[in-house]
Image (cartoon, rainbow over the protein chains, first blue to last red):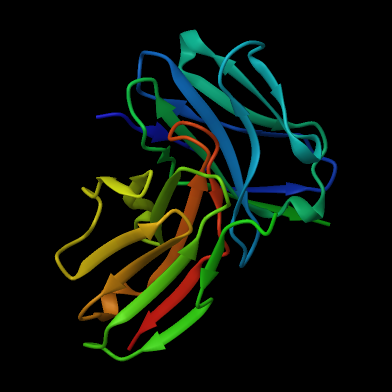
Length: 113
Length: 113
């Protein structure tokens, strides 16, 4: 069965530190990839997505992600985090033959001042 | 655009009562999804509709749960009878087509006592 793995469950960083959150998926074919963010008490919002083309995708709020097909990965990065980035981050995948969005378990990011 | 609208935002009920959650998708979107989020299980897809037709309800926990989409602008998720283990945040999401970006509503926080 297809799965999405986020190995970092809880990350604590100081402001201005660099961020990289891992995401790996198990499906071998064409995939649509997403990162969503959920701020405390709020709903999920799209950060960025990859369907095709340039594997380095830039999203909102200075986030970017790189699709590495050979590693089945779609890691999320930000050069310098802010306190306001404190949230839970979800990686999600739609395989080419499916319609359902499968979410990872999420990574809780805590940014300290 | 108002985004995905869900009501109520909070619901507290007693075990055995019927609960109805409502969702209005973004106008023009053809696919609608119901998710449940809990600490233990994360984000789970319960059911999704395409052009008002239920496509996959394999995520619906049991017969106590039912969902309808009588028209393109309205969907309901009903739990009857409700149980304490149904306590969760229920999100509705919509997308233009099945494999495109899903936009989430603010969620309904359900507490069953």
